[in-house]
Amino acid sequence: MLCKICKSKGRRNKAVIYLRHHRLALCKEHFIEWFERQTEKAIKEFKMFRREEKVLVAVSGGKDSLSLWFALHRLGYETYGFHISLGIEGWNYSQKSLEVCRRFSERIGRPLLVFNLKEEFGYSIEEIAEGSGRKDVCSVCGTFKRYLMNKIAREKDFRVVATGHNLDDESALLLSNVMRWELGYLGRQYPVLPEEGGFARKVKPFCFLTEKETVSYAILNGIEFMETGCPNAKEATSKTYKQALAFLEHEMPGTKLRFYKEFLRKARPLFEKELKKELELNECEICGMPTTAPVCSVCRTLQRLREC
Image (cartoon, rainbow, N blue to C red; front, side):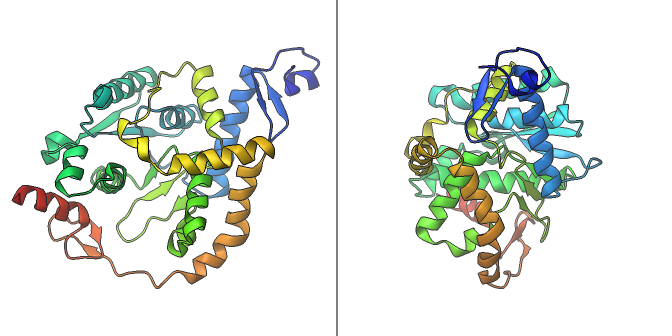
């Protein structure tokens, strides 16, 4: 199969990827150009950040987050990486993830900020989950990650935090929220979470790009990434929703993109109207971060652990 763009210019370069839902075959050069153009398009469409704003990119060592950092760097944005070392011992996961992020930081010549959970708080994420009586490590991990992204952004004067969530992630989350009719989550699901109430702006420039496209971008650019997922994510329910959508996508190419785009265009405004009046935020009595309670959930969890 020939690259569609090359063919239109009278060249006969072979395609390295075929995007079924776009009916588009592209060579390495034109796929990378297309991918970065789609990223830039999403940034502008949703007014995620301006050229002069510095962007804190949350990087785990996986394909999506490192591809995002690479793409934003190539597009000329002032980027800084941020990695949370969670202390996960299975497969030496945290140690290897940090090493991958550091090597990538050196490759592109951009700074990497690292927060070591064990060193700073005294516990790994698994110890925190076990000590708090939570079996679901992923939900505890998500709470601490969101807290730390906002904390570091605030301390280091970043107004924007970018994450590598892709179309597969967003469509699976949407399906999950629809299945449970989580009105609040449906009203808030959007490629941009606004900067307000002491929270940094959270953005998802890869919201319209599939996992296949991000991994292809990583491979074609020679990006080293963690090929194994977190050992604690084996029971994550998101995998089931992704599998269901993958089946539909195989039968009807473009399903995921239509599902998510049409939700943003037609349904989200309706759910947004149903949101309750915004809860009043105040500063946590211990850490000063925004919270609806006198003490935020992270500080409460750490307090319980230290009292045991």
